Length: 503
Image: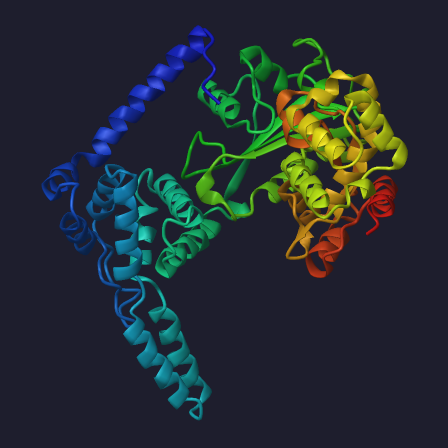
């Protein structure tokens, strides 16, 4: 989403001031390292090797691991400056060299592994010491540098962005290097330590929050795009709450953002939340607030993928809301269903290929489709249906909407409940909330009629409800036994799917 460009004089002046400060800081940070960086050049593998040999210092010996002086900060700054100047292709070569040539000393590990086998009949103290030496020898050489980078100003953010690059490289399949995967694992382990929940700060975002923070909240909103400054003002105003986790090493940078609507009942459509607002100066009537609806949660840092933040944020926010509204009884998400429409197209195509089109809809439903569209019976009607769903044209016919409601609802229920990856929910949003212990509670027809909502999930949204006394049990049941806890509505829709599809 492009930045919001609306004239707010105070914000504009503050933003300009911050921008100048950042530019000044960058100049000071790289000033000491710049001459050496420029002397190495940015082209060719030799300059990379020279830079790496200079900045990635040898791992201290086991005996001196706690006594060895740290390398100078200039090493970290030079590494950061050099890397930022590389283009995409150069970064790939650079990271492959770093991960392969400055990783674990495999020969030393093998020698210690043999020694460990030889000491198995010795006393416990000897075995434990050799095990500790072996454990230390498994430390990649570059891990020492990464740890020191985290201590210089801007270093943690640099490492978060570095891991985002590594993830992009490994997922795009441009390389299948096991060393690159090990670098990703090392970075994830370090970031998981640095971003543990005890080191995170919960911050409520209000209209009085720094302008730059509000701008970032708007830009990072990945679920329901913010349209303008009035929109964001409403999302942090009456009957709304916005919370973010921040970290001391990345000031002013929200890591994960949660938007909450305070309502009387559990919402069944997103329009009532993001488009139909109370006035900006409304006074909250506490007695009307009985439900907290988590309608958007966005991770802002690609480099923190796999580092658990969102589930902790929801739990912290629940405690905050319980403190503010002791009588609040209902906690639920109102979640999109990304991937459903794409899955549906493939599913319908599979049934057509297998000659089982008639099984998907009842005879009456097929007659309705054929009458409305004028399509011939059989495969032609299925192809017409696929085209209608792909284009969203079905919404133009009230009769078609009524006909497709039971069809799409039961197919969506099966997608969320029955379609699995390694035994867990295929849909990533479902998997997130189910891991947290939520119940797959209610599917909502035409809950998001925006173009994105229709394209992604045929307008259907889902409530994952948090029954606070049951979340631990539900989470354990899902993670350990791969069993989804669902409501009667969802299970009834799944049963209808089984009946119609002859599964």
